[in-house]
Amino acid sequence: MKYYLTLLLAILSIVSCKKSDHLAIPIEEVDTLETNGFKFDYLSLVIDGKTYVCKDNGGSYRWGSGPANRKVASIDAGGIHLDKGNPDSVMFFREYFISNDSTFSVDAIFCKKYAKKDMTQQFFVWHPENQLDLFRPGLQGFATDWERENSYDGVSLKVIFKEGGKYTTYSTHSQQYPNFPTGITNDSQKGSRFDIVKLAYTKRGDYIEAKFKTKIFNLKEESKVIEKGFMRLHVGYFSKQ
Image (tube, rainbow, N blue to C red; front, side):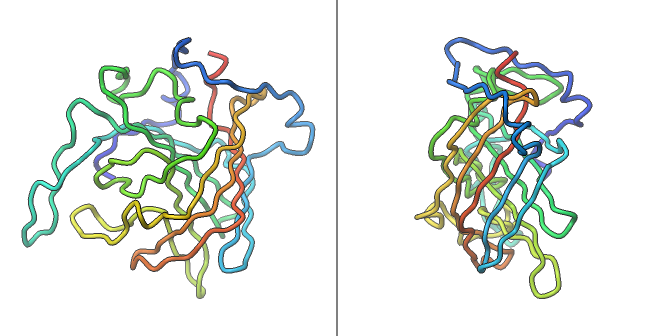
């Protein structure tokens, strides 16, 4: 979306994040993960009784920052117009792309609001001191107004798969443009769960394991349910810096 500033992966590779003791997060060090057959990132889930599996995202990801806590400024014939958000806050995100030979893919977005005074700006993008803060073990919220008001911290998933012979996109947040109304609210995810059950370090960097069950919505805001969701995802190199 036009509200976000993102960087090419080549630039990302030269950016470092300073670790601070007061932001330290307990992390397990694992030496055997790659030798036990879990060499790649892995995701599996069930939709409408069908199991979908993805392996390895090839290191494809992006990160960036944007406005937070946007409010409705006006409504007219052109639709809903949001303001620029709280000038003292920033929504930071990391997004990971996992696919399975172009027939099924998942984008996993982890986002959180921060006070701008607690962030650092590099290459026009604001980032927190410790990006592992996005992946603290435990139950996560759902960012149901992602790329709209940006008022909720948490996780957002976008799933693309074949339905009726054509590709369809479903997501845990609204796919409507911000100037169009949506019926998807935070209450739409009542009963949903996204639980980060593990945060660990390997030679490939930090990774998480998560279990989840959630509702997803298409452009018409018709819903399906993801069941038996499991994700193993390498998220970056933070804990050893």
